[in-house]
Length: 111
Image (cartoon, rainbow, N blue to C red; front, top):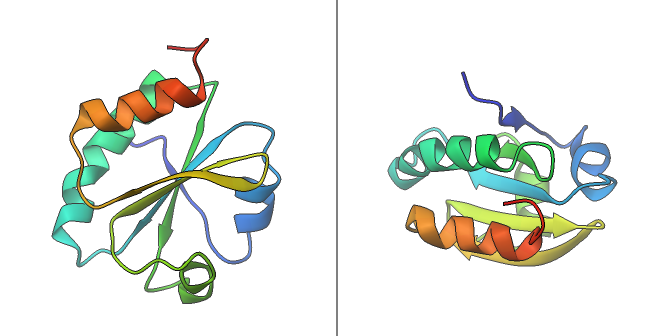
Protein backbone atom coordinates (compact mmCIF):
# COMPACT_ATOMS: atom_id res chain seq x y z
CA UNK A 1 0.00 0.00 0.00
CA UNK A 2 1.41 3.34 -1.03
CA UNK A 3 1.78 6.12 1.50
CA UNK A 4 1.77 8.67 -1.33
CA UNK A 5 -1.57 10.46 -1.21
CA UNK A 6 -3.47 11.95 -4.13
CA UNK A 7 -3.88 15.72 -4.24
CA UNK A 8 -6.19 17.70 -6.49
CA UNK A 9 -7.25 21.23 -7.35
CA UNK A 10 -9.31 21.50 -4.15
CA UNK A 11 -6.57 20.30 -1.77
CA UNK A 12 -3.35 21.38 -3.54
CA UNK A 13 -2.91 24.73 -1.79
CA UNK A 14 -3.38 23.30 1.73
CA UNK A 15 -1.45 20.06 1.16
CA UNK A 16 1.42 21.44 -0.93
CA UNK A 17 1.78 25.21 -0.90
CA UNK A 18 0.98 25.65 2.81
CA UNK A 19 2.78 22.53 4.04
CA UNK A 20 5.24 22.97 6.90
CA UNK A 21 7.43 20.25 5.35
CA UNK A 22 8.96 20.00 1.88
CA UNK A 23 6.54 18.32 -0.55
CA UNK A 24 7.32 16.28 -3.67
CA UNK A 25 4.44 16.32 -6.15
CA UNK A 26 4.36 13.61 -8.81
CA UNK A 27 2.53 14.98 -11.86
CA UNK A 28 1.35 11.83 -13.67
CA UNK A 29 -1.46 10.19 -15.65
CA UNK A 30 -2.75 6.59 -15.60
CA UNK A 31 -1.96 6.04 -19.30
CA UNK A 32 1.70 7.12 -18.91
CA UNK A 33 4.07 4.13 -18.93
CA UNK A 34 7.09 5.97 -17.47
CA UNK A 35 4.80 7.37 -14.75
CA UNK A 36 3.82 3.84 -13.75
CA UNK A 37 7.49 2.83 -13.74
CA UNK A 38 8.36 5.78 -11.50
CA UNK A 39 5.55 4.96 -9.03
CA UNK A 40 7.42 2.28 -7.03
CA UNK A 41 10.50 4.53 -6.75
CA UNK A 42 8.37 7.34 -5.37
CA UNK A 43 6.71 4.92 -2.92
CA UNK A 44 10.16 3.79 -1.74
CA UNK A 45 11.38 7.38 -1.37
CA UNK A 46 8.23 8.25 0.59
CA UNK A 47 9.03 5.44 3.05
CA UNK A 48 12.67 6.46 3.35
CA UNK A 49 11.93 10.15 3.92
CA UNK A 50 8.77 9.63 6.00
CA UNK A 51 8.44 12.34 8.60
CA UNK A 52 10.68 14.84 6.81
CA UNK A 53 9.22 15.09 3.28
CA UNK A 54 5.59 14.77 2.16
CA UNK A 55 4.74 13.07 -1.14
CA UNK A 56 1.66 13.71 -3.26
CA UNK A 57 0.44 12.51 -6.68
CA UNK A 58 -1.50 14.78 -9.00
CA UNK A 59 -3.34 13.26 -11.96
CA UNK A 60 -2.78 15.75 -14.77
CA UNK A 61 -5.80 14.48 -16.72
CA UNK A 62 -8.13 15.32 -13.83
CA UNK A 63 -6.34 18.48 -12.63
CA UNK A 64 -5.26 20.25 -15.79
CA UNK A 65 -5.46 23.72 -14.25
CA UNK A 66 -2.70 23.01 -11.76
CA UNK A 67 -0.60 21.22 -14.37
CA UNK A 68 -0.91 24.25 -16.67
CA UNK A 69 -0.11 26.71 -13.88
CA UNK A 70 3.21 24.92 -13.28
CA UNK A 71 3.95 24.57 -17.02
CA UNK A 72 3.96 20.78 -16.99
CA UNK A 73 4.90 19.90 -20.56
CA UNK A 74 5.87 16.23 -20.05
CA UNK A 75 5.09 13.56 -17.52
CA UNK A 76 6.25 12.21 -15.24
CA UNK A 77 7.38 15.48 -13.71
CA UNK A 78 8.26 15.73 -10.04
CA UNK A 79 8.28 19.17 -8.47
CA UNK A 80 9.81 19.70 -5.05
CA UNK A 81 8.14 22.48 -3.07
CA UNK A 82 9.57 24.00 0.09
CA UNK A 83 7.84 26.87 1.86
CA UNK A 84 5.22 26.95 -0.91
CA UNK A 85 7.82 27.61 -3.62
CA UNK A 86 9.23 25.33 -6.32
CA UNK A 87 12.84 24.48 -5.41
CA UNK A 88 13.56 21.63 -7.83
CA UNK A 89 12.05 19.82 -10.80
CA UNK A 90 12.73 16.37 -12.23
CA UNK A 91 11.33 15.67 -15.69
CA UNK A 92 11.03 12.15 -17.03
CA UNK A 93 11.99 8.78 -15.66
CA UNK A 94 15.16 9.05 -13.59
CA UNK A 95 17.26 6.47 -11.74
CA UNK A 96 16.35 5.98 -8.07
CA UNK A 97 19.78 7.30 -7.01
CA UNK A 98 19.12 10.66 -8.71
CA UNK A 99 15.76 11.03 -6.98
CA UNK A 100 17.28 10.11 -3.61
CA UNK A 101 20.22 12.49 -4.01
CA UNK A 102 17.89 15.43 -4.74
CA UNK A 103 15.81 14.57 -1.68
CA UNK A 104 18.90 14.23 0.52
CA UNK A 105 20.03 17.69 -0.62
CA UNK A 106 16.65 19.03 0.46
CA UNK A 107 16.78 17.38 3.87
CA UNK A 108 20.46 16.85 4.74
CA UNK A 109 19.79 15.96 8.37
CA UNK A 110 17.19 13.28 7.67
CA UNK A 111 18.71 10.56 5.53
